[in-house]
Image (cartoon, rainbow, N blue to C red):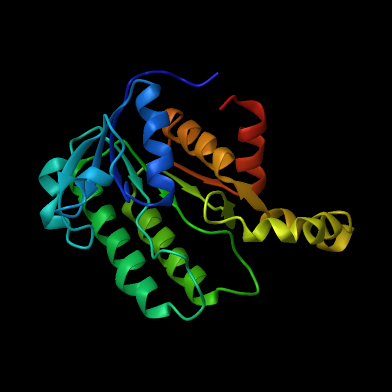
Length: 224
């Protein structure tokens, strides 16, 4: 069963694909959620969530809104990642993670949850390189943290990858390709949200990494 101890959660990327799905679950579980949004985007945040106006690339704009003991959830990222978006990955994903980790350490947050990406992988090398760099920033910070490594999250507007399911089943049935296929497997949005809620409600004492098999296992064990 999930711990329902009410937590104060500061979240970046609240208007994105994951953020809009995650926030209602956290609110239903009794948590107080504050989402960092750019000015003018307040109405895109789910009802019941508090908003903080600021720039996720500039920690000075939101440092005062982060409180000691908060759980910090980092969801900012380039929409629809693609191999040709290398500059955006560094300008947005890396810059926002650097700002968030710095603020979280300065303010003494209790737990940092970071959505990274599964690796290694034969494609999306620029994206993986940036996410790995963000993971290293977090490790060096000394913050208690959970790194969640999905590959592709299927859901509204992200269903094309479901066509690959027969191919995945084939690879998972072959001993030499099983581990890679599982590590780079598809995850339904609902399963990803269950795993994120679990990670938030069960903070790591030091450091934890959740891979695709871990995400799936939490999704199987817990109700939505």
